[in-house]
Length: 193
Image 1: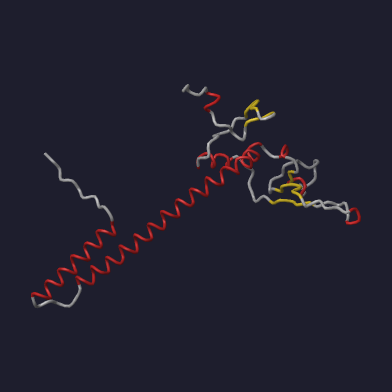
Image 2: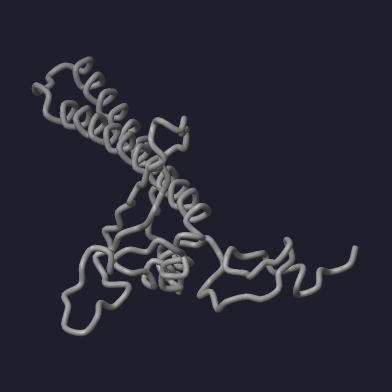
């Protein structure tokens, strides 16, 4: 098996210029990967939000048997994308991008990568939720074991051998439960001289 060439080894990026499926050029993408760092870099390059979608409908009229569905007409941003004539205040349509060419490159790149970035973020979120649930379960186990130990240590005073043995058994069982709930605990190593 031969090693891939640099062109084969590089993963295709949504920022690559394609013509008939072939890469014919590439823009300077800060990081093609789907890492959280790459996603943050793409987000930093976008125009600020919130963005809203402008939906348009066909104006053919019912008399023509029109069955055109509504479509996305533009994206509105809080940022002026096209400058108004001198002396005029920007209006809503100056904050509208109805063509991708009207969007800054960083924003278009962010949108193009979103289809891959969102699953990456959701997978990270799901993994963190699992960790949080494990931590909650462990906390509950530690609390229950600590209560058990506290009960064993603060029980009524003992007088007979049987009561002493029962108290020691409960204490040992509570300590064992607490150790199990805490999991492996690192003990300090003694210094060797």
